[in-house]
Image 1 (cartoon, chains in turn cyan, yellow):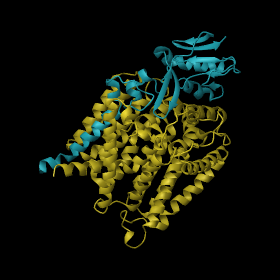
Image 2 (cartoon, chains in turn orange, red):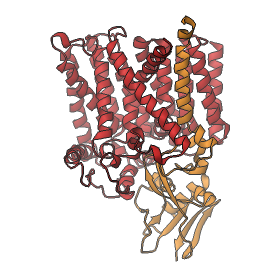
Image 3 (spheres, each protein chain N blue to C red):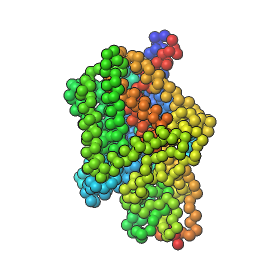
Image 4 (cartoon, chains in turn cyan, orange):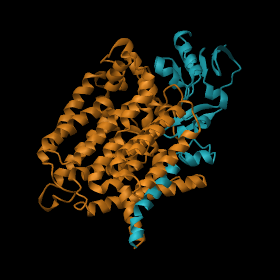
Length: 156
Length: 441
């Protein structure tokens, strides 16, 4: 009984460890869960962001597009972005020209590397969940700037 | 000593470099490291005097496994914060600029100053502030150690730092990283035995720090301090004096703290940003009151903010993503709250159910721990103010569950829970300990 009592801290650690393994995103990743529009199993950026695009992990090409939009584009035109791309622009230019809803007037469209590689548009964002849709229809858009896979379009 | 140093250096360097190159192995190594170190501590294989070193390396590595991903900054609020720093570098600190980030001296003074000295802001955000924030669990370890012993203090700190809110959310908000150090210090001094005047001074200055670093954490800290004073006052008579723990902090000194903090907060937020945060704070209380009064009717949120260069991302989120209409009162709460109280159990996968069972168990263990710690408050030498802080944090969590839209108009569910864990994380550990001991009897 004394020996078992000495192991109680070990039981406590095992309990905490099991909980941590679940909340770390490990289970979400190894089971290849892709549920993100509600909290199913906890996911993590470190394990799964390349699949789920929870936050933007931008490369130089994404930043190049954001800088082009800020400094070289027509500053009178709004920029249509999803919740993943927006952060690349707001850190340079704030929310000045950002829109999440397709404007009636002429506008730019920014697709970052993750959008292109995963063919997804993050159109909803609340606490620990995201919502995806297909990329916008590019029929009436022309490419105006590209860096790597990240691309900026303008509506024709 | 050498083994400890080798561990901290190799783990943190591996995490930093591996994350920059987005090496898939990094998070797996972190999970294994946390579990193995915790088990070694439980089996007395690590010398107690090295606990802080191990805690720091694990905390820093957990933060870096998110913040160091790629070569650019990672997170949600962090991009708005970067914009504030760049704007300040270009135009100086404009006190009239209505932007919540503009009220944080990290973004308007410290980061721009270091940038001018040659430390690029991007790498400050990725490397430096997580290094500061990683001291938070260490400070909490020293606070909890006095009451629960080194081993359980260590495990409590591990429980705290392995929360997704710490690893992911905090890693992506610089203001929070700095404010958390101050809040941890407040918890430490409430549990300490230093002279009363020093305790009052340090707690007050640290509370000022939470306000200067992050308005949300500052306001929540003030709420907690006021709650502590109220509970300490109510129980300061006759045989109730030891109801919530040892009385070593005279009430007349304790009252000084929130008084000074309120004065500082009003002064700070009036001077910077044209009082915008004060106005929103008043509107938030009005919104909470209205929501309480009309539980079954459409909910009222904080007033809409015009989307402009001054609007922060979190405000846009609540405006453009409308949750579906749900039939009953509690199911209208945020998704994380409905998860915590079991309303979505049948809607998730089998692994989701496993997670929820574990989550309910941690919640149950925390409540058991609360009762055990209260019953043994004199044995654990619990300070009355610290226990009062625990009760206030429970009140915050209950508000998050039962007050309509509470976490939408105040702070997010994750932030509320993270702040509560500063006080209540040992309770879960004590609850598990008590339960296991009961089972093996």
